Image 1 (spheres, protein in one colour):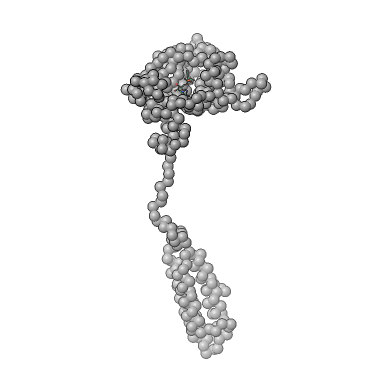
Image 2: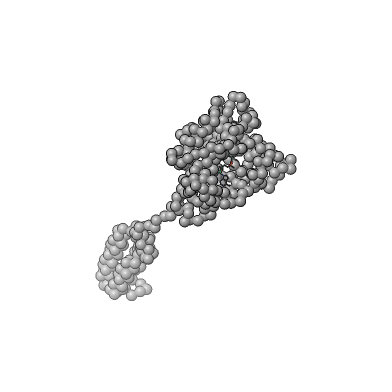
Length: 351
Ligand code: FA5
């Protein structure tokens, strides 16, 4: 026996175990300490195995003492294991400065952008009238954005739509791709791919080469509407627009229809709502007119119907395209459209 075994030594081992065991923080640590003392090569086990090395007259007494120590240590380890370690206790003990029983910090939950909110409200107003929601590409072919909508290459109305062309030429040396200037290209796309009756609503982003002011942005959202069937008349268009305006603005707002020109409708109108700020008196938001234009609309032009293979003698339809931010401005009393995309949280958090 290399070390002198005496009562003091046994007491010392006991003391060490008691002190070490009090610091243990997990079952793994208990197991490691148990192995250190009581494992096959543990301190106490080794002493027990070497008992034959001590003088025979002391062997019995030390044997008894060591066995008592072993039993006591077994008990201590068992008690410590039963203390009920769980992940939280363990975590707390390891990171004593953190008290994970404290209530958690409230997560930051964002809110919908006012444009998204209004798009959803518009869709909700039209779906009970049988309109289906569809979406289209933001990068569009000239063919859909202009040609099929009765806006050929030399048409003057292209000027007001002069926009962001995509730097890609086709084999005719043309630039046929652009950031769409309105959601109307989806009129042709939907008609090409379906058989009437059609009733669709197309929300989406559009882009224009436009100087910005309180009511004009260079990128904004539109919602296009299209209904095609046998026997659709202008009265259906008016009824649908009134129903929508009542659902969104309530019955007190005034609605105005005025003749307007869009190459893809005949007759064409613009629809305005009386200005919410000046109540019709004239201010900078309504450009001193007392009215805010919210949509262009009209009966689908016979040329457009023909270009997608529909017989205009059989089918007729109406279409409209509204500006979402303008509707949000009216609904929430927002005085400058540029607030929508300037990323100012003081503005965005209000919705
Ligand atoms: C059009 O874009 C047509 N495609 C609408 C249409 C569809 C007419 C179907 C007939 C049939 P317009 O350029 O007027 O039309 O735009 C439609 C609406 O978008 C406007 O009434 C307005 O509410 C909104 N709008 C237009 N330009 C801007 C702009 N720069 N910033 C914000 N909103 C705008």
